[in-house]
Length: 277
Image (cartoon, rainbow, N blue to C red; front, side, top):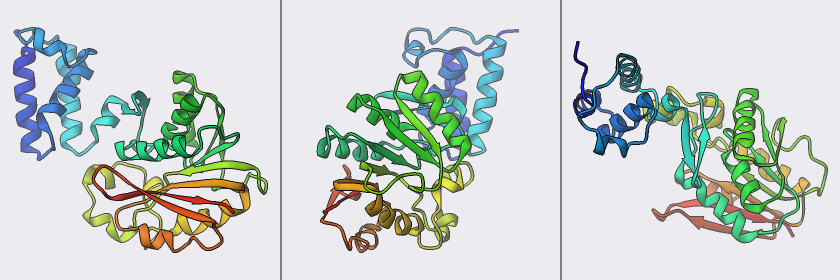
């Protein structure tokens, strides 16, 4: 029996995704079909009349069905780009966001030669691995989730980064005044905000990496005081924050020498950097 061509498969996929109110249905259809065919999307432009093999159509159909049910595209393909590199992702870890690249860029600019760097809440390892590669030095990554650490370790091995992994609660394993830079994109969503979140985030991404109590401040309120114990003189704590959290997190600056605020491309305060005396 004749199978659909690439052009027809993309058209049908786009219509199905649009009917399910999936954002960017055309792009999503292309990404999912490329995943099914094990090719790059540019291949489609040169081979629109190529017929799909049965196994390719079966896989593509399954991917479309999963995405229509709300499963994020990144969990279907198993990867997400961050800082120009492909990172493996799974439902064990938060999907790296483009805005988190500002956190990495800020650390690289403010502390280009740190000796000891610690990433708290490592998740996929996107931050720790990127810093290790860009700084050309070891980084320590901490997460409370063993599943997340497995994903992060795979990414470090695949990308050739020197990262040590610890399963722990925040900074408990570290001695006083032993670290130059602490970086973290912690859970910061208020539990009360769950009903208004996108279903792809609320229903699929790990709640341990998303929610931080009723106010969204639980981790900040613990991590910022702990960081003062662990950091060396002039050490930095670089934090990603959520929309509207700048004032609440900045209010925890007592005992710190300096506080800097960095906004993302949309002009939203996204990164706070605390500096030790």
